[in-house]
Length: 114
Image (cartoon, rainbow, N blue to C red; front, side, top):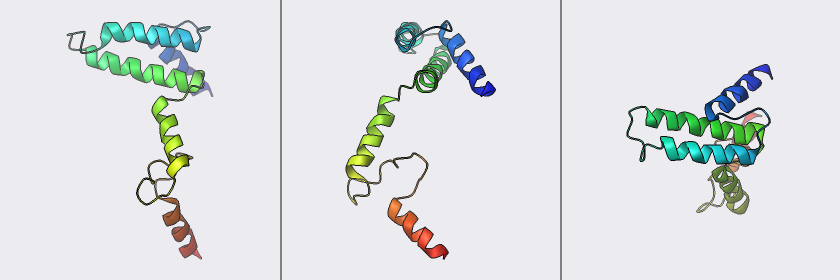
């Protein structure tokens, strides 16, 4: 828990957010920083690294502090619920995010144990 708080504090410092900031504040600040540090706009050598740091801090805060999922994570979960283990469209993303093999293979593996 203490480690998580340090990570949250570090992410807030990267974005320059106060402790009482909301998700809307984080989004607004992220967009302002992206307009300044995006490598397509900023020609400085460290712009790419700075933008990566900003992206990581923003993603961490949105997920861990504010409980907002990344839109692509949500899409992958929807895809898995929609198509699951379909041989053509399925096998895209496990629902719990922990398994890497298809559920049918997992069942066979468990069945071989004994």
